[in-house]
Length: 276
Image (spheres, rainbow, N blue to C red):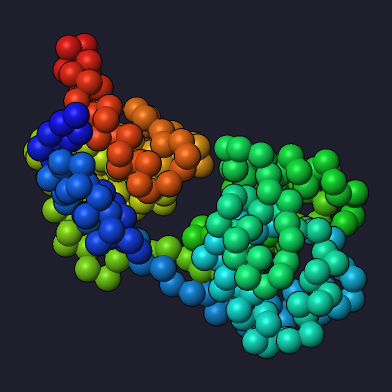
């Protein structure tokens, strides 16, 4: 199989940029990796302290862990500041949005209920609504951006008290030149495939395009490219921004994303070209 067969493949990966570059090359693509995010920790000492007070007072009835990175950072801060919190947390029902937060919890000896696929906030919402009573208190570890408003509104509508605890936020990278070049490259037709490993990547991509007065041109270019998503949460986030994913990885892993995109890119791009 020719895989990408020399197609120009763009990734917006930041944390695992080198690994992504290598994978694209392995499957015959000409790789461009333009980091789109910078993770910034939130100064949440007072929030962690408030969580500890509520926990020790028996006023935390569920903990929702939305990402592996966020869960690790939160537990690290909590245990460092309040070593006696961990035994009490073992008695709290914990829900994990996917395998990564579940794995992070296991590092601390904590068990969690893994919500069904596709592991989006909607499955977390369904679980909390099914297992909690009115006036109980759910703490949600936010990941990169605030909790979706429909998620919070639905829980509050069931009279469940919700506290969102931000662990980190995602900002544009310090050096935006590679991302700017990626926007201009898509607009000029330089790239044929876009790989998305988070919805936040697309948000920042469009945000920068807007700053460059190229948003509509970028959206038009993306419609002619293959947009491949790592999973349902990413696909949904892109769709909310008006960008349709053409293919979705399953299982939702980076290696599967690259391999699957390489397998399907030529045929999908051919069908798009024929439909014009």
